[in-house]
Length: 428
Image (tube, rainbow, N blue to C red):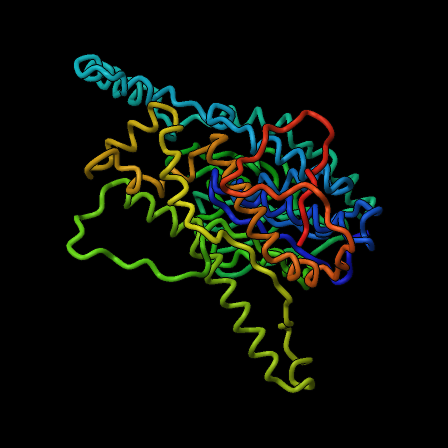
């Protein structure tokens, strides 16, 4: 039932920033539903779904519901629209340190140091709530069924092996695909489990490593680490068209440094490091793909047929606003211990929200922030509705739907428990 040529959805990493991806998917579902050619078919527009980090969780949830695309998007939207940090992580260790009282804090620090020496924790936060959430909301046992019924060709999840240093792609497909290996990266066929999702989304230092058994066993961390070619899994699985959703601005005017600005705070440095892990490799790989496309277009047909390279059609959707700026408005919604840690890592005047926003944006699993990102994803995609329709070869509807698309000034309403569908959006 999936299209030929195969269309792949590529979802990058970024912690709480992945809420933006849900907004993009909501708009795509609305555009697909409005198309006369596809309205009654309920088809999954993506034959291949590839995800990394938090994008791996969205990818797996979407893949498991590939036979009901709109329902799967609706489920994701309800979760992200009503998110709370305690659904993803606990702050027990930090709570012991930040008591709010100076002498109690000193005693708590001593107790915490003793406990850390005894227990040797592997991360700052405990993500066991995320494991419970995945068990409830991502029914991976359905993957075999949706692939057997040809609603989906392949799902690929990436993670970073802490022992070997390799970037590993685990993939499951409806028909066999030969594994591949490149410098510092390898791909192996494997049943996708919740452990793969926990491993792919284990932000270094923040969440603990996850142990994976089966092919390429070992301890893994976030798939965005050492990821040099995020588009590669989709291409190897046979995609000829790529819809790529970023969680950081890929275009726009460069940010200029202020004259005589003070040295960066620890929070700024941490945010900078996170951006290099989660955002840079996708932008570089997109540029590489575009250069290859331009080079192939210059070659005669006879020469082009002799190269294993092939041109790829792509559509890239990324935030039109800086997510750091949005996070700065919501940093107060972080759990108290995390917020206090952010402030202690800043030596700037005021509350340091602007300086800490970069690192905070990855941990802000709170509804006010995620709803604003979902709305931004909807707006950015609907602003390019004609490009989306052309990419999928969907016809333009003759009558626009009635309900307006949510905007940043109009927060998304609280999700209703039923039905499992994407709200109608006014189509341009």
